[in-house]
Image (spheres, rainbow, N blue to C red):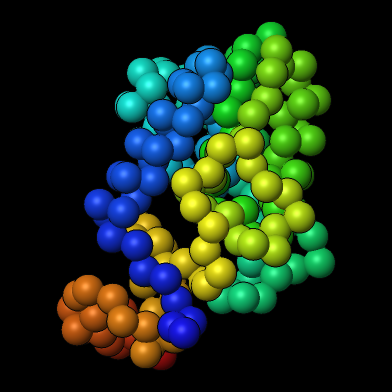
Length: 183
C-alpha cells in the first residue's frame, strides 16, 4: 500500500460538496465558519462559497512538526473569533488525524458562547479519537493536500505529485538565494 494519498483538486471539490450536502441534509446551516489554519483555510473558503456563508474566522493551531511527527499537544498561536457569540459555528479543517487539534479549537470557540458548534473535515483517519460531525471519507495514509504538497515533498522527495520537476527548480533557486544571503 502507498504511504501517501494525493487528492486532486477535483477530489477536494467533490469532498467539499459532499460535506456541504451532508450539513444541509442534517439541517445545519452555519452562520460562521472557523477555519483551522493552515490546513482548514482553503476547505473553509470553498465551503463558504458553496453554502453562501459570508463570515469566516480563523484559529492558527499547530500540532504537527513534520510529516507524521506531532508535538505533545496542539498549540494555539492566534485566534480571530470576533462575532461568533450566539451564532451557529462550523469549525473546519482538512483532516482529523488524532482529533487533538479539532478538540482544542472547539474548546476555544466554545469560550465565545456560540449558539451551536459543529465540526467538519474533508477526511478523517480511522484512529482519530475525535471524529468530526461531518466529513467526506476515512483515509489511513498521510494526505498530501494540494495546498501543502511542497512542504511534504521537501521532506519526502519520492512523493509522486504533479509538477515535481518545476518544484525542484524553484527549490534549487531558493537554496542558492539563501546561500548567497548567508555568506
